Structures are given as structure tokens and as C-alpha cells.
Length: 258
Image (cartoon, rainbow, N blue to C red; front, top):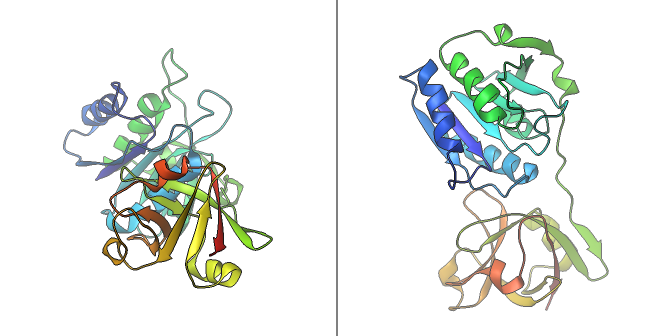
């Protein structure tokens, strides 16, 4: 099994080409597209989405490519983990949450076998490496060993108290306009209390009630809830919190008690 996650989108041939490269090497390998809708260049969002998805994916080779530094000296990696998973992608922190959840044991820097292009490592380096791993090629045959402790990590920015408010990073947003927050319910309660909140961006504000699900509030009303991946999230019932507040992943929100 090979899984793919990227910020490539579906407007061009990039995803299909990666499928094609894999199929030429190992035609029988099943491929799951986890997501190709990561915000362009947003390595942190890609890391969090990969980590959320891993518990629900079969053991296999997991390829992730969100790679603003493609073509530079950043390393290309293949990782082996205690639970049998292998990960392939750039050394920019993208793989590490999921790999450490899986029990990271060994890492190699992939040998770069590009053609004339230095801007499509998904096709030229990562997809071929993943296919070879899926075809039972040993990790150590794909590159030189590197110390796992030397690999890049991506810390998640912590919520920041600001007077009577708490500033919280938006880590992701889905097609319904729900925004995921880098904050736990306990952190929120400790900072601003358990009651209704005013959530503000630089442009707008909305009131939000603590709720378990969308039908707990009226149409067009805001709610804060713990989503299906155990993250704190802000939604508007039958509406878009992202559009209402004029925000996107990487922006910060201010939360305070009503």
C-alpha cells in the first residue's frame, strides 16, 4: 500500500504523474490519495493532516510532499518505523509527527537520481523511492543512513495569552469553512473560562457557543467543538467560519469570554 499527500492540487498533471511513476515500478501496489489540497507551501498543515490520517490508514509506504525548498540543499528522506510503516518526503518537518507516532527507528537520505528537472522531486525522487520500498527493496539500499535526531522538526505554536484574550493559530480549514485551532479545550478553559466566546480576526468577530455538534446551535450561529480528529475547531452552522472571519490557515484568532 502506498499513500500520497501533497499540496499539488488537481489542476495539473502532478498527482497523476506520481501515480504513473509508481505504477511503472510496482504495478500491483494499491494507492490511496489522502489529500492533495494542503495549502500551497504550508508544511505545518501538511504535517498535521498526515498525523491525523495515519491511524486510519493501512500499514504501508506513506509519501508526503509539501516542499517549498525543492531544488535546494534540503535532504530527501526515507524513514522506517517500529510499526512497519515507511515514510518518504523532504526533511522539513513534514513527516516527523506521523513518523514519531509510528516509532521512528531508521532514516536514510535518498540518493538523488533526477533528470534535467530540479523542481518536481515528487516525480523524480519520492515516488520512485516509495515504489521501491513497496516492492520490498531495503531502506538502506536507497541512500545513506542519517541520525533520526538530526531530522527537522516543526513545533506547533502555542496559544498566547493577550490580556483577557487568548490568541490561537489556525492550522487548517476544510471545504465547509470550519477552522481548526492549535489549542486544546483545557488550554482554552484555563485562559478564558468555559462559557460562550467572542472569536475575532483582524477583520470580523463572531460569537461562539461550546457545543458537541452542529445541531446544538441555530442556523448561522457559531460553535466551538472538538472535531473528529480531536482538535478544537470553530464552525458556523450551515455557514463558513473562514469566510465570516476572512481568515485562512496560518492566521491567528483572538478568543475572549463574552
